[in-house]
Image 1 (tube, rainbow, N blue to C red):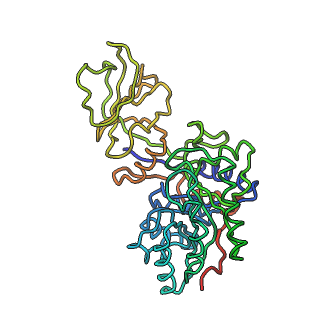
Image 2: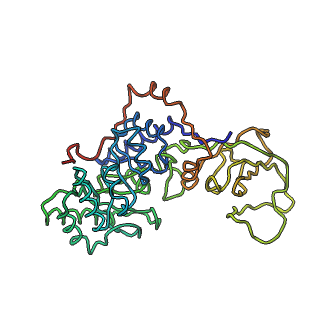
Image 3: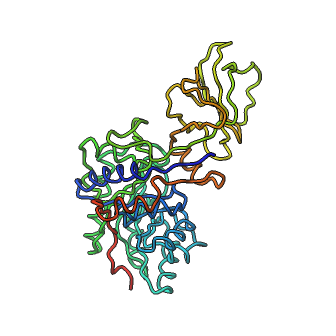
Length: 382
């Protein structure tokens, strides 16, 4: 049977390492859980590990989290849209914003619900995603500052999420300068400079420091150990939190190169350099591009190579089949972020946490040394 396995011991290892590095900076962080697609057992496990603050980009996920783990602080990462304002205020303790019309609607709805809604104002620093351009920030903040029902907790930025640019100290320092300017002008504390994403971590793990940032939003490295600068793994983090176990439906010795013809394959195929006539074992597993990004799967056995996939099938070149696998055996894959997202969002493939939640709870619940606290003040409501 095909299944995604979430290794809680590996997850706890990465959580502790990232928390230590960020804490040494004098900063705090929020765990980004959007890639879990609302998988409540994993989120329950994170809560057992000491996590109190999570961030997600889907309201359905926040609804499930509110139901199963109501004590968690919840950030809404997706830009709020007007038609969802009621649910955002109801489900999220904080949202990231860049449109004054939406912020006014959030404030109006918050007052209707008897709340103050916390926001981070997003600033454009070069990733060309969401954010106020720096030149219009002062006037924008004035309008937000005058909006009833809204409390501005700080400024934020996305770097490396769309454009792929690496952060630099000059970029980050701009946020600190903007905060000082706004605090001086309006005599109101902006508590956070909040930065996303995993792209900030390699510099921190190398002993570097971003002086202006006091809050991070981190997800990918927690689950995959990814170094977004090099494309490899951050030393000290594990890359086996998420694995796919896929059952072999066929295995035969075949040619490793297809007959020549037009390139009409519906999905991108990896560029594999095999000699014409070269033969080897090819295994077919019943996970395809309908389930995930097949090109983001990497077999844990180095000799195995993903040769491509259709909507339903992934083909793995197995060389000499060193482990003598046969039909019914499984091939284990690690994933990149794209494949991870696809698998967790796929309703056809079961997800299994290991060890089971109760066993994990008994092992760590009474002596967890990790604490990732709520970021917002408890008295943020009216």
